[in-house]
Image (cartoon, rainbow, N blue to C red; front, side, top):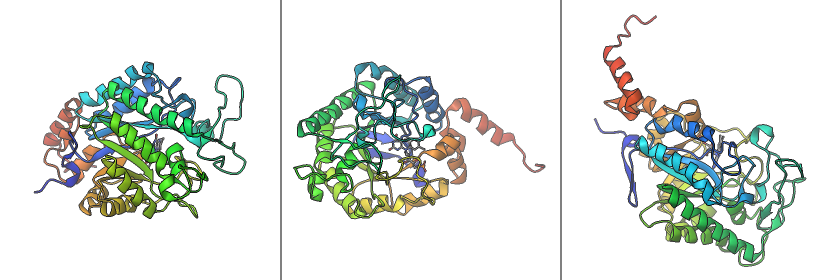
Length: 377
Ligand SMILES: Cc1cc2nc3c(=O)[nH]c(=O)nc-3n(C[C@H](O)[C@H](O)[C@H](O)COP(=O)(O)O)c2cc1C
């Protein structure tokens, strides 16, 4: 029997991922001054021993003001590196690779945590006050929300440098993969989208000019990230808003990113209006897969599909159809950290328990050899 694609390795630059399943980046809002806490360690522990190929650390701010909330992780100072390294070591201990997503929240910074409503912080004093949002233009996220301050060209150059410095720290922490967060309405996406970018200088106007900042970041990060390590980029492949980013725009961006050494496009969507991770829009299984498929075919760039990928067969079919190279899973992994064990059973892998750490897998394999289900009630 042939091996399911889900369980075949993938090599990107010098990194060989042992299978195609990735933990999608998920903010935990539990950091203190950007530093990871025990919560993050237990969060990643749930997945690290579960057999996945690559686990991603959440959107991590390249500057203090680039965090979404006061609870977001940061990578703007060296003191944040040891706790990040602890997560990298955790994944490595179980044979998985570890990645980090770096970003800047832009006009969506200074927000409350999701369970507190995710709206802009209104307090101006106390322990967690509001701070100034920035963006390409002074267009607020939505009517009634604080307007971001439009960045000057020299501030833009400083932010590119902040991405470079963050890249150096990600390297020091030992990450295998770096992902630039170019999605969900945050700073990089807000430069690319005509909804939020109304500039008339080198950074706005035509699609090529709106790509300028994303490409500057990509080029600078690529130059600072070792040539043997893969660099991913997450897009909001469509804004889903009249006049916003379309798949055609994203394919053009993918081609430009590919020319600058980006190895894979992680195809998400949305965030230009409404909450990034709390959207109340109805979704269906695999709702974003067509974006990964379009980019993979039209830009000839490897892609990662994400979004309501729930079932092993569904994931396998995406790979078999040639719609994506990797499968990222977020919420279903929260529900089911050992999803890969179920996938190995469902797809007929000969030794399904072998995907897990032997400290768990040993017992499941042994049980499988003795369990007689004939008299099951
Ligand atoms: C709690 C939570 C936090 C998230 N944080 C991030 C993040 O840090 N960066 C990001 O790009 N997407 C983030 N997302 C989006 C997920 O990575 C993923 O793309 C989305 O949840 C769809 O996949 P799923 O249906 O498998 O959960 C987050 C989603 C959730 C539920």
